[in-house]
Image 1: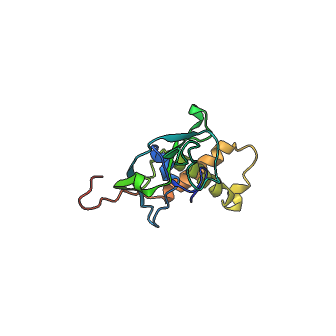
Image 2: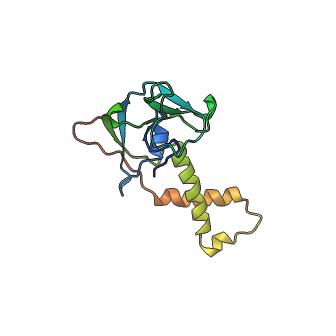
Image 3: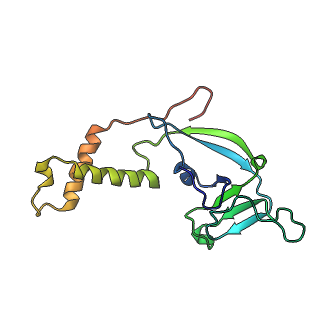
Length: 169
């Protein structure tokens, strides 16, 4: 997925969970994020969307670029984002430093996994056999959810993180 909340630039974050939302995994769930060193220089602080931005604003005094980057502020700092975003428009401002390979485990409690687990349990309830879907109204929904969670737990086997030669896990 990609976005242009602050125009056509290269986006970075200092929150791993935010980066994870933009990562597509392999079929086996393996994912990779790039940790980069980013030179922001003089940053334009953005508290609202600027989707039409193709390049940084010019300086009124000499016509040069007034800013080197954009910092999209989070709600805690007066912006509209859940987490800060950093945007550069010149590729020379970012230096990839590390590739981090990972996969979410069944025990993962990050926001994305919790949301996915909730969606999965709701999907399981919808696709349950007719007998279970037509439980009497006297059976509370929490019990129905527990039945679905138990069925899911029985069907899943634990997965382990992949260890690549020469890399720490």
